Each structure stands twice: as C-alpha cells, then as structure tokens.
Image (cartoon, rainbow, N blue to C red):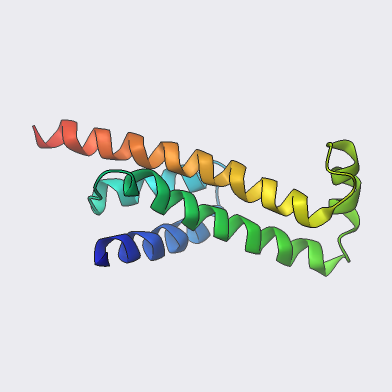
Length: 117
C-alpha cells in the first residue's frame, strides 16, 4: 500500500515537471520512470499510474478550461459526440491520459524485470 501511494505521488510530480518542457507524452515517460524506480505488483502496475495521470489531466484540464469559462471545451465537446458537455470532455481527457500512462507503467515494469535478470 505504501509503495502504491509513493508511486502515485511520484508519478504526478514527475508528470507535472515533465509536462512543463515536453509534449503530452511526458506522462508516459513519468509512468515509465516510476514503474522502474518503484516496483509494484499485479494490477497496481497499470492502475496506479492510470489514476495518477487521469487525476492530473482532469485537474489540469479543468483549471485551464475554467479560466476561459469552458468556451473551448464546449466547442470541442460539440465536435465529439458529447453533446457539448465540457465536464464529460474533461473526463474523457483523463481516461485517455490514464490509459497512456497505465500502458507505459506496464512497459516500465517489464523493462525493469528484464534488466534485473
């Protein structure tokens, strides 16, 4: 449980720092790095980075969208089949980021196991 929390917090911090200088895929790099540094077991390898990055992206998207009264979010949500709901768009954004991070976490765990052999 303690490793899960440490990995969760480290993933958010590294993702935040890397997202300042790298594009969207920096969250995948953050998940990859934390999966190598903090070994997790079973399904936590996917779900801890998934929830960390999903939370990070949803909060960041909400913060950016709230600054302009969700104007762009509403327009993008009309283009997608979300009926103009900006909050649903923020949820979808978090899920997409979480999936990318979870898969990168699994890849990091596999690379760590390969390097240990």
